[in-house]
Length: 394
Ligand code: NAI
Image 1 (cartoon, rainbow, N blue to C red):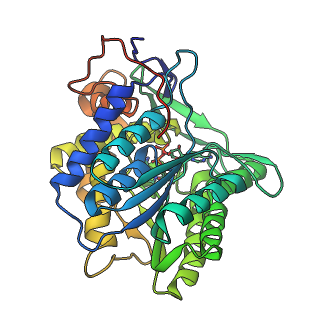
Image 2 (image 1 turned 180 degrees about the vertical axis):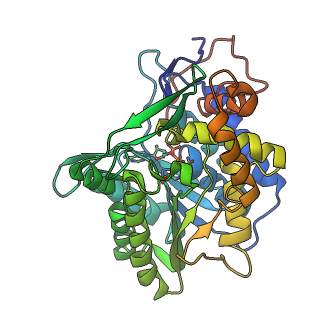
């Protein structure tokens, strides 16, 4: 079939297998261009490995430091001529390239929150890899079926305590408007914490530890976002921020356990970037469009892969070890949060309108990157040619 982008709201419902492979290829090329990561990881489990920051972490580990990787993700294969989700194609492309480079790579597709997927993953690590020295927890999910209670928790992206009104952009239509979001109920807060908080990360680490599958000195990290004040009501102080506070609680609990054998767990606060997860958050895409404009001009713009390569090379595996902030977090949002960058974004924010969006913000760059997430707009891909959407997972 010939596959073209079909955008519905903030998702693209199609994806291009060759385009996704080209995108993964670009990320691999970036990591190899930066040279080997000295003393990097050797055996890595990435939970949420198929797109965004998790995929970038997997690529940094494999192609930066020759690590064997096991990737867990939840992607849909193609069916009846409908293309698979991009993470499906990304994972196949990654695995092919890793194996061609002589690296072990294997994949588990299913619900990471479930006991069954944890069991399968432990089994795989035990039989193929042996104890892991790094566990990356990079899930972004709209829901979680709790393995003990069977309750389905749904996460929401809402302010807490009071309604919030600010500008937002419809990135597809390029329309800037004012949006008011009602505050979350207590139930919605606790559901979001159940999905995006730290309980499941702790469950993974306990299961790995109990099975003797954490190498001495093993490290683990999960990702968070803080951002500037203009996003706080919807992010840092909103439902997702409260879930991230719980992720930080989990980091401290896991850290205390890993310390016993010389390891550690921590949160890396990453830069705001276009991913499938972030495009669903109100207000944030407008902030990202303005931020991209300012950071590109300053020459400090990074994507997921630049962020993760820098995290691995200059923090996690730096000879002096990671630098932590007062809250024990690694700050990969350091360049985003520089005062001059934030001042420029804050200055542009009040004046941005539908009419001047293209000029004031990098909405074009946002859209290009959004399409790339689904494998569209990559150089060298024959988008007008027939392509086979059905590909078995490796
Ligand atoms: P993403 O949507 O690109 O990736 C999510 C991953 O989780 C995919 O691999 C997906 O298959 C997997 N997944 C979702 N539900 C699953 C389930 N039930 N079982 C197994 N796998 C499942 O998201 P993104 O943006 O890379 O987010 C990853 C982490 O980074 C999140 O914790 C997010 O809050 C954080 N982060 C994201 C930022 C951004 O701007 N995108 C900024 C800072 C942190």
